[in-house]
Amino acid sequence: MAKKLSTKQTLALSAAGLLVLGGATAGIVAGVNAQRGTEPERAAASSPFDLSAAANKDRVRLQPVAEAVAQLKESGFTPVTPGKLTVATSASAPPLSALASDDNTTPVGNEVDVAQLVADGLGLELNVVNVSWADWPLGVQSGKYDIVSSNVTVTDERKELFDFSSTRQDLLGFVVAESSKVSSITKAEDVSGLKLSVSSGTNQEKVLLQWNKDLEKAGKKPAELIYYDDFAAAYLAIDSGRIDGYLGPNPTALYQVAVAPGRKLVGTIEGGWPATAPIAIGTKKGNKLIKPINTVLNAAIKDGSYAKVLTRWGLNSEGLKTSEINPAGIPKSVGK
Image 1 (cartoon, rainbow, N blue to C red):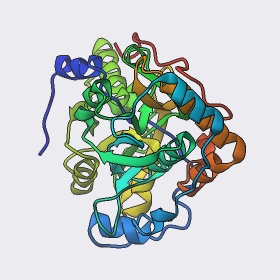
Image 2: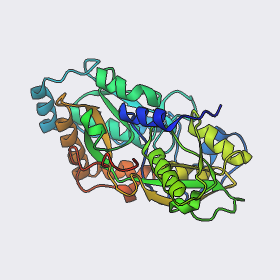
Image 3: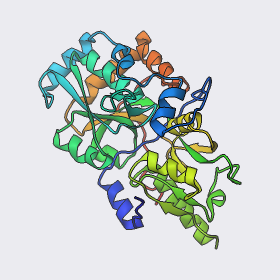
C-alpha cells in the first residue's frame, strides 16, 4: 500500500542515518529475453544471472588475508557472533541483493558476494541477515550487525555515525512505462507534474525534494512523490499506470527493464546530484573494524576476485582501482 511522508518525516529519517541505495551498472540487459508471468518468474527466467541459491553456493571466494586477520586481532573488535561476520542487507533489489529465486530465503547478489570476500579475507564465516531499511542504522550502531553491505552511498552525514570502505561508483536511473510519453529525465524540469515513486530517506529522494523546491521557485508544478514498501510494488504501479515512474539505483533500474516487458530507462543522474560519492560497506563509527575490511577489499582488487564479482553481476563498469576508508561523501548541504 502506498504511503506519503512529509518532507519533515523523510528528512528526519535521513538525519537518523538511514542507509540508502544508489549505484551504477552497464550491460545488464544484454542477452535477456523477457517472458510473461509473475515478477519472480520473469526475473528467474529472463535474467542473464542465476539467482538461485544452488548456483550461489559457488560464489567467488578469497583466501584469508594475513594482514587483515592480524589487523582484526589487534583491533580488539569482537563480531556479534563469534567466528562469523554478520552482514545486514536489504534483499529486495537484484542484481544488488535479492532473495534466491528457488527458495525465496537465501540472500544473493553483488552486495552479498562482496560481503563474502570480506568475510573470507578476515577469516570469518559469512552470516547474511535480510533486514528492512529502517533496521539498518540502529542495528549496525548497536552492534546487532557487524557491517551493512547493501549498496550504501557515502555521505558526510552518515560518516558521523558509520565508518566506510568504498566498493563501487554511484548512479541512479529513472524507469517509466514503455508506452509513456516521457522520453528523457535528466533535470528538474523533466519531472514537473509527474507522479514518481522513490524510497524514503534515500539520496534519490533528496534529489527529487530539491528538484521540487527548484520547480516551485520557478513557478512550475512539482512532482508528486509516492512511497511504497518495496521495489516490486513501485514497478507494479508503473505497469498499471498508477504512477509515471520510479527513481532508484541504476543497476536495479536496468535489471527491471531487462526482466519485465513494457518498461524503459529514460535517464541517469549522479547518486548525490549535484555531488557524487562512492558506494561502500559500512560499520559502526570507531569500532576499528573498517581498517581490516579495507585491507581485504584492496587485496581482492589486487588478486582479481573483486573484478570477478562485479563482472558476474554486470557491474564491472563501476569498479574502483582502490578502496578508500571514509572517502569524500555527499555534503550535508546537497538536497537541502
